[in-house]
Structure formats: C-alpha cells, structure tokens
Length: 308
Image 1: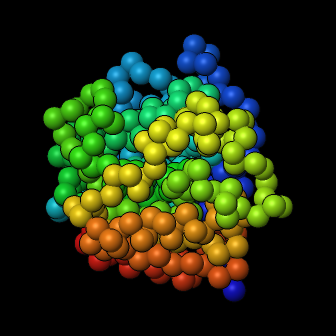
Image 2: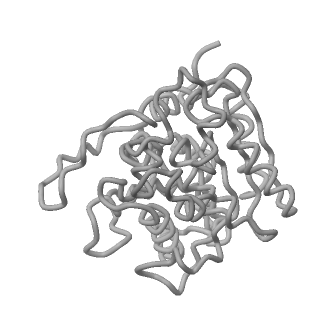
C-alpha cells in the first residue's frame, strides 16, 4: 500500500519529537523564512503567514492561517500544534492542510520552546493563539463554535491540555482575554500525560531516561520530574479533566518506545470516568509515529462528526 501524505508528515514530526535540536536564535537575530515549505495550497486559498498572536511578543508566538475562499458561511477550523519534545519543531509542514479541500480552515501554531521559557509558557501560547483566532473569526470567516485542536507527541500533550483546561484561568495570559480558549474537539496522537509514570512503562532500550534532569520533560518543567511532582501535576492534562470537556480521539502506537501507550490509556480512563466522549485507538505494531488509511479515515470521520 502506498504511504499517504499524512503518514510521511507525521513520520517526520515523530522523528523530531524527542531528538536533540539546536537552540533557536534569539529574537534579536533575523530569521530566514522559507514560505514555500509544506504542501501546495489548493487554488483560491487565502494564506496568512507568521501572524503574531501576541503583539510585540516572542518570535515563536506566531501562527499561519489558511482559509478556503468562496465560502458562503463561517468555516470550521482545525488547529495544528506541532511536536518536537517542547524544544524543537515548527508550524511548517502541517498535516492538517489536506483538509482545506474538504471545507475546513486550518491554523498551524508555533509556541515558545522550553529553552525560551518553561511550562506553562507553552500552553499559555496555545491558548493565546486560540483566543486570537476566535477574536478574528468574523474577519476570516471562521465559525468560533467549531474549533478543533490536533497535535502529535509534545503537540498531543498540548492539545490534550487545551481540551481539558478550558476553564483554567491560570493559563489565560496576554491578549484577547475576552474570548474563550476552549476547543470543541481534540485529536491527540501519542502525547504524554503523567511524566512521572513514563519510565514505569518505558522499555530499557528506549531513547533516553525520562527521569533524568536533562530529559525533555524535565527541561519543560524546569527540573527533574521526580523531584518536582507539583509542577508535573500542573502540566498533566488529566489534572483538569471535567465533564464539560470536548470529545477526544486518541491514537497511539502499541509499540511506542518513546511515549508508552499506557499514557493514553490513563487519559482515556479519566475522560470516561468524567463522562466525556472519547475513543482510544491503539495502532498495532506502530511506534512513535504512524499513518495510513485507517488513521486517515478515523481522523476524517471524527472531524466530520464533531465539526460539520
């Protein structure tokens, strides 16, 4: 079977997900932007690139927005949040772009990485981006009641937090505070949840020691995770689960050696207990990244059900 475009893109994001990356240049240095990266846009798509959702903020606090033109009514929006171990990755090469031809608008979000600021900066940025999009929904023909968040790996962690922390005022920082940062659906691909439990299920031949002071999780919260359990709980989407959370689609490889699938089972169980609609699909034989027809169809069906 031919590899789908989604499989290739998710494989790329997964390959970067927990790799060592070079630090980003400080805001004072000019950046070289390649605006031709990523899939070709369908004809007639309006593209807004590198939009600052925090005025005069960090260079990473920007997003791309793509809107099909000619729509007669406000469009549902899919918001992509990239992976990269919270210390790498980019909004470029967004796999949600293929949904433009299906009548969705698409936003792809950058956020401050852990070398720029520790948690909760990352979820603060994602929420600021959602608020910006909602504040400008009428201008760009977006339906503010039909926003979905989709992410993989570290991005899966952040979209899960977007889904469960809708009413958490502590994370609402910055501009457009009169608008909600809630989303109406979440697609979470192999994101971590409780950092203190990852090593319990992680294989001995995994890529690194999750409990080490230099692990991605420890770098995110600003200290070794087993010595900072209060901060780990603050970063855990399960901490904020409530009955008014949006529906979730969670997908996770059952052979993932980076983020063990039990992390997704924990979130699934918490959502079920709260009465939230959730589907967890364990992808047989898949590691930290997957694609193919089944994944495509599940994601497409989920968006059609909850956004259309």
